[in-house]
Image 1 (tube, rainbow, N blue to C red):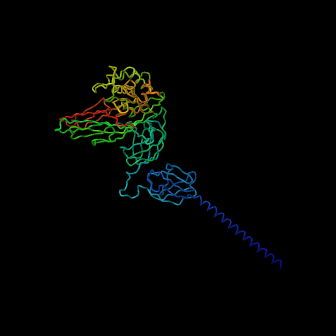
Image 2: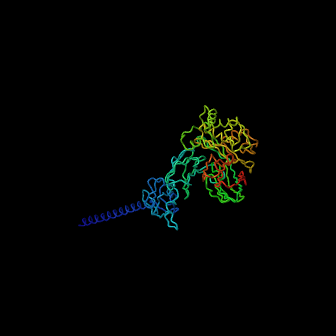
Image 3: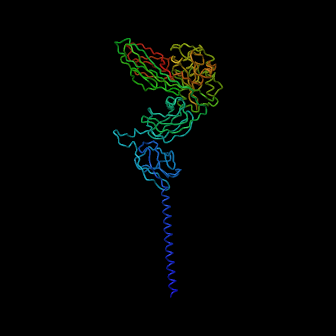
Length: 562
């Protein structure tokens, strides 16, 4: 009996021990599970802040927090139920995410999602959807660039910019590129693609095809509209032929005046003046400082247009400009210049065709051009051969000839002024299928004195426009030839090399190529000025033929130099 009791007690003791062990194991398992789950929970993304929390399409937004992961992989940012697409991510780290807001962004909750779950949300608001006194509609949205292709190219190559809010018509909108021209850090180091150079191929609200403009350098690209500028995207610009090197900068305050006298004060005098203004080009930045009296039109690309009704007995018109000039060297590899691959391009067609100013279709020009360049196909070599031929065979007259004299006289008389040299050089180049144009403007002498002057530009593929001043190399009277002196200050013997491809800060361009101005009425009496500081068909238009007046266009003067 005693043995049975001991056995029974032993069994009960062992059962209690087993139950205790089971409970310990169970508690241990629960602790492990709790630890694992709590550890995983700490790895879920945590969103601390959004900056800014109120923003517009195209803006950059930074999300800060923890446990985002060092690489995005399949992780994501979700705003108002829509996930940001791959192109919208700018940077991703474990504690910070940078995104660009898409064009269709909406108000709503923001989550960061990873393989371990989603963060707790924060709220984002689309700035354009916030009520205001005057609600902004779709037309007020900033332009947004979503892609550029290709991401590299040469001057003249077409790139395609895709995005939204560009506008269905370009109007005054533009594409802005980086450039190296500004040596003063206070100036904006940007240049615009130019319709004058046929840089724009097409423009829609979501896609722009534009050529990389002359003078562009690697860096940012932006679209500018009346509503503002897009965020910048990067573009690499290559220079297989060579790159212009900017070496100097100078600022002038320029004044242009016209004196008028009404000789028939009893007869109404209705007069329209097309006042040339300096051009915005690669090496020249212009801002209008003042215009008196108040003009009809100031934002014309070529002229300030004045209408006077009636004209006082004596009256002076005055315009002042700030002109920032940049000097540069061509740094071109002549052997790398290639023949033109797209002869149907607008620039190629326009600037190899004769016009009212450039007689490149004359048989005498055609024959002479062929005799000078025969056997050569490289456009650079042909342009240089024509340049050297003119300097060696024609005499430069320092007095400007009368308007009625034809530039073609140079071929027979072997002598002409700077205007003749520029026009004939341009004509000979066009006859040789080299895109070229004449440039009219001012030559600044001794700091403040100016004189009307003419030179030319030729265009090389993958490089851009290349300046050529035949007259200065041929011996035009010029008090100081900046860039044409050696380190000792003595005049260089190699003027010829310098003015074939280099530009100083003493050439102020008022017109590139000839501008055809149309009359407002067929009965108008018009005045032209051929050998002046601009190339345009009409300078003055008088709508009343019975009236009489006189005008004096003074040579623009320099008021200040910086």
